[in-house]
Image (cartoon, rainbow, N blue to C red; front, side, top):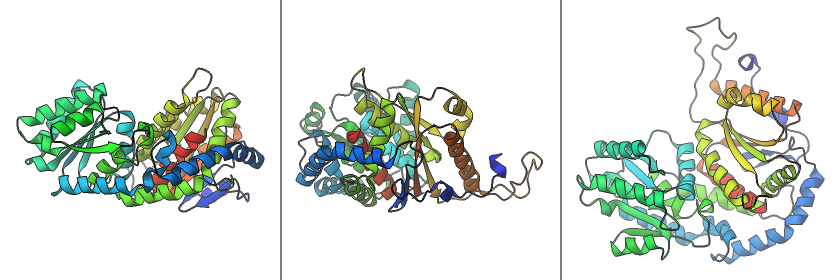
Length: 421
């Protein structure tokens, strides 16, 4: 059915109400189907005004004394300079592998950005987040087979507390496995942790390179610290553009008016529907490369909101169109305990089309020569129509293209939105 739909025209979802639907930079936001009114969002802005003022003061101060100090990270030139200095010291010849030992906030942010932007070029980034026998052994074997010089690998050990069991176990195993072939493997290690943590002191004693994480900043809010910036810089990501997107979004989300503040709108959407019994928030991505971004947000929301038995929103991640076939029946026909955000990109770097000459020409008609982007767009449009007909509340975010700047803006938006929730 989707294959026979007309070419995608996302503009049909745009209303004349510029308060609920609007463009920002290269991203489009729609709260038209959120089930909330303009007055609902304006009431939220009044409620949040004192807190926005508080966060604005923290951001302007430029110091790390409060948990919300993470809003300043994208502006911190000192962090950027230390990351670039470490990069220049450790990456003097092309890398083949970057191995990150970390879990939760210490690796999900970097993985989200890397997976979203990966194009097959540059070094391969591998993540050791769980002391699983098979995965850890195979990662070590892959790196050992893949490099001939120790300079071709970079090992990042990231633990905010400095004593995370899983991270220590994975890091110790991996470095020990490489030590037989490369006795100087420790020269390729960079440790990222709280200053003066046990890991910090041990790394300093062994002469290892160390980068700090501002202590008040929680791990799930740390992607714009060295935890995210250093591995991303090493992998070839444009961290300048990544930070710039976040800086612009910070200014947007610290406005007092709700009309063009996606932080207020997103928080109001979640809080209002939670009060009405919708306790599940699904991030529905129609670009599979953004799945890790969804998992990063899953931790952000779950760990921030799940502080008591009386309040909690369960975040889930869905990928279109695969999950329309696996859980779509539940979403559309099951309990109405969910609120949804649809995320997709308008354009990409690649193009695939259904061949004109087909192996099975009789299975689906009128699909010859159709671009995949047009097909998935039609599926996305159909899903939103179905949600609308069933009265299921949803919001929409459309990237013009998945870039460092847009991902940086999205991640900063979600962190500030979560604070507001």
